[in-house]
Amino acid sequence: MIKTLKNLVISTGVMVACSGVVFADGNAFTPLNFDDVSYNPQQGKVVANSAVSSQPKTITTSSSTPASTEVTGGNDMQSAILKLDNAQIDVRNELLNYRAKYNDVDQQYKTIKAERKALKQKVKDTEKKIKELDKIKEKTRQQMI
Image (cartoon, rainbow, N blue to C red; front, side, top):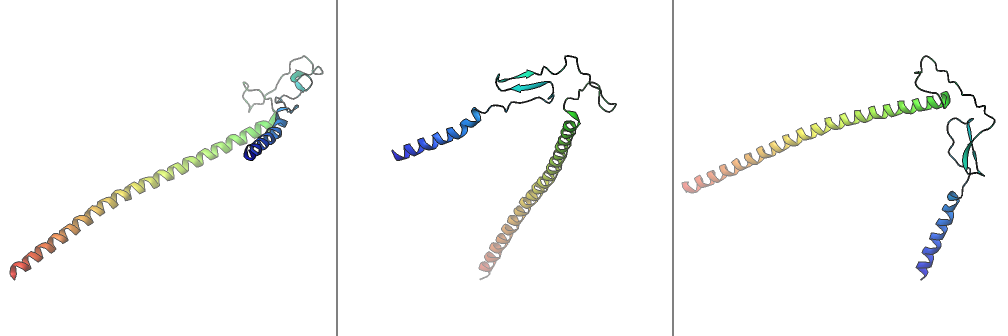
C-alpha cells in the first residue's frame, strides 16, 4: 500500500514537472528569414508582417556563390554550415585513418595467429618424435639386458 502510494506520488511529480513543456507558448520555430514572418501567440500560428512591403526581394549573388543557390540566412549562417561541413569531413578522414590502422593490425594479428598455429604444430610433432625416440631407446636397453 505504501509502495503503491509512493509510486503514485513520484509519477504525479514527474507529470507535473513535464507539463510545463506542454503548456509553453512562444517557443515557436522561426525560419531564417526573420523580417518576413513573425509568431503571434494569441493566434497560435505564424503570420506575415504587414509592415513588410509586398514587392519581391531580389537577392544578389557574388561570383564565388553559384547563381542557383539563394542566401537566406546571411553570411554567418553559411560560414557556420561550411565549418560544420569541414568538421564532418575531418572526422570522416579520421575515421578512414582509424579503419586503415585497424585493418593493418587485424592483418598482423591474423598472420601472427597463423604463424603461432604452425609453430604449435611443429612443437607437437617434435615432442612426439622425442617421445618415440625415448621409447625406442628404452626398448633397446631392455633388449640389451
